[in-house]
Image (cartoon, rainbow, N blue to C red; front, side):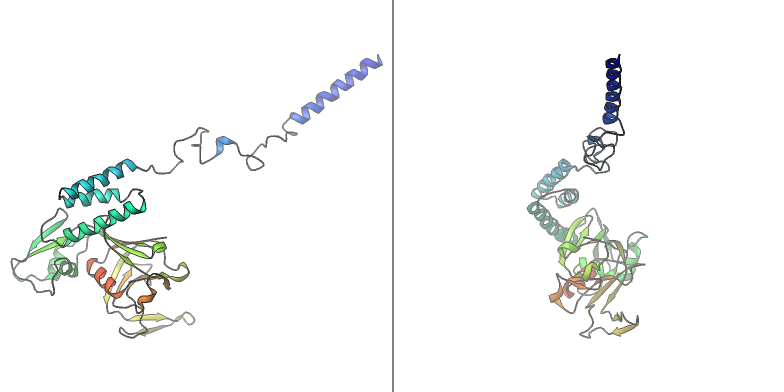
Length: 312
């Protein structure tokens, strides 16, 4: 009888020990939540779509249409060899958005610059330009105002520049070619470059200086005002007061031209320099600084309302 009682006690004790070791309270081999010693495979955000199933691409990650971009690049080459520069430029605008190696991107950039030089400055009509016939009593200012819209500002300087005119004198029945596409500016801080684009194709690339201590803001801005031979209102950081330094003074850092951003970034802009050696460095308080010849050329090609995007 005693033997039977001992056997029953041992059996009951073993049952409770087993239950503790392999129950929710005593488990140690598999953590209940991520972050202990292993993470459940079905909750890896890089490999699942939120349902526990593996997805082909991570959520919210855009698909790269590399075949489309490659086809556009081949089309641009074919159009160029066939003399269709407008077709080549249109195809390059698509291809430029793809991911290509550095030599291929350099090839595309050179092709766009060459094509834009020919199309923008040629007197021949293109799909994205208009030929304006000068009327009696016309002047460049009035012509620019006639062709401007709420979304697109045209300046007399642009008409002068793209028609390679030495002065603003015009004659009745004279033909003036005026680009009607979209100019925009892109600044890449990491490479110290400013790129002017026309309908998403490169027109020209310039070296620039940017802000010390990452002071140049990133984002999308618009040119609000333009000044030739600007004075500089230098701010005293200690007192908050300003000192006007006239154009031509060696201490004036703005150089030959100023293109200021719209509210609330009115203290930032693109301007010239009094020190070419600073180009390609972090030398400013936040503005984008260019060589004077470069900023003058850019100034003549863009109007107020031009979009400026600044990225890392």
